[in-house]
Length: 271
Image (cartoon, rainbow, N blue to C red; front, side, top):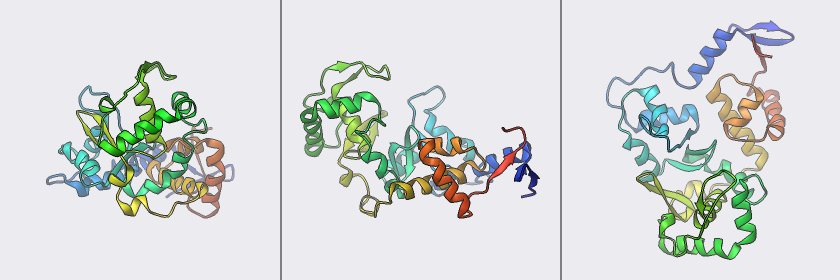
C-alpha cells in the first residue's frame, strides 16, 4: 500500500486515502460495455453494502442514482425487480430506510429486537407501549389482507404529529413499529408507496430462518462490511454506516484490528 510511518502508526497521504475510498466504493471499476444487467447491479450492492431509499425526486429518486454513478445508464426497473420480484434485496433501516442484500437480513435481528427500547423514534415506542391492542389489530390486517398499504387498513387511525414533524396517522406509526421490529416486511412499492406483508411471505426462508448471530457478532460483521465499503474511515464513520452506536462499535472495531481484519492508520491532515 506504500504506507509511511507517523506517531507509531502506518500513515496514508490524503490523496492516497481519497483513492482508497473511491476504489472501495466502486468508482475505479470499469463501466460495463454492454447492457447493464442484474449481475452488474449485484456488484454495486456488494461494493456499497446498502443504498438509502429516499423520496427526493429531482432528477430521479435518490436510490437509483448510486448504480448510475458507477455503471452508467441502466434500467431503473431492475432495482425494483431485484428487491420485490427476485427477492435479492430487502428493505430495512440499514442506514436510514435502505435496500440491503438479502444475505445480510440476519445481521439486523438485533435492531428488530430493540424496537421498544428507545433506540427508535418516540412515536413508535409510545404506540407500542400505550396502544398494544391497536398495533395487534394492524398486524392482523396485514396477516389477513397483505400485501397492504396504510390507507387500506380497516382503521388507519387519526392523524398525529410525531417527533420528526411528520403528520402521520396512527396506522402509519403502528406499521412503522411493526416494520422496525421485523413483524412485517416491505413486499413491494406501487408509485413509491410501500405495501406491507408478513416476513414469511416476503423474506426467502434461507434468510428468514438463518441462525441469528449475537449482537456482538452482527456488529462485527456489519462493521467489517462498512470498512470494506468505505476503504478508509474514522471509527465514527464505521459505526454510522449501519447506525451502530459508537460506544458499542469501538470494542468490536478493536477486535477487528486485533484479528487483522482492520488496520489502524493515521491520515495526513486528519486529527
